[in-house]
Image 1 (spheres, rainbow, N blue to C red):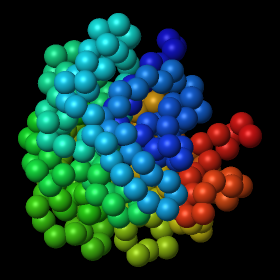
Image 2 (image 1 turned 60 degrees about the vertical axis):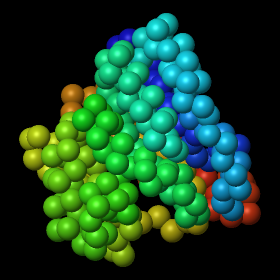
Image 3 (image 1 turned 90 degrees about the horizontal axis):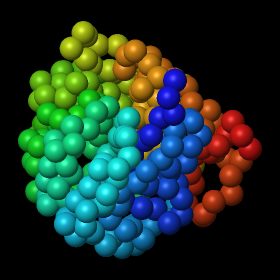
Image 4 (image 1 turned 135 degrees about the vertical axis):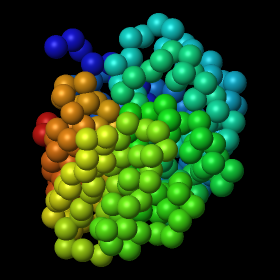
Length: 266
């Protein structure tokens, strides 16, 4: 198999647990060569977000053109987009270069609860990005925001919302059920061929900073190696479970620490 080139389009995390830093670690851990385009410089750490400096949309476009005009990109993860103009810029370049295997992590809030996407950008994401991407990975609050609907409170409501999101034009939807108060952490994958349930035991650690970024990056890195999203999700979730299980072996920060991206190596 050819070497996989993976692109992340996201904001930064100087503490290294989320955003572009987490994505590049994930790509490397899973054997993909990582490229990156920054949408925002985020002053954050394990305790929360202190400040956000949004990159001008024209410079986001310039970064995308630099990478996509030169490097064969096999798979892409999109994370924090911050503002409507940045969503538009990314959507324009995805269409121009016909980018494939795009995983959209519908980032709206940091783990600390700090907002990472303006309210006006949600509608633009719904209209411009969802029809262009292969997979979206909303948690329950993000799914509710995209659908302008109440928060799903059980798996039946998760399934209904997952099918509604699929109807918006993306190839597949992975509804993440971590916000349900269950012993398991159920996720539901929806594709044109049906739905499939994935479960994993909840791992008791406070160190979950960047979990969503890491999962979406893993899905992007692994997709070119598998024939289906179902196989991709199964491997990505198994890898992330190990990263969570080993998270307490790291000593990073005084708040919600990161998962251990290199658990198989260190």
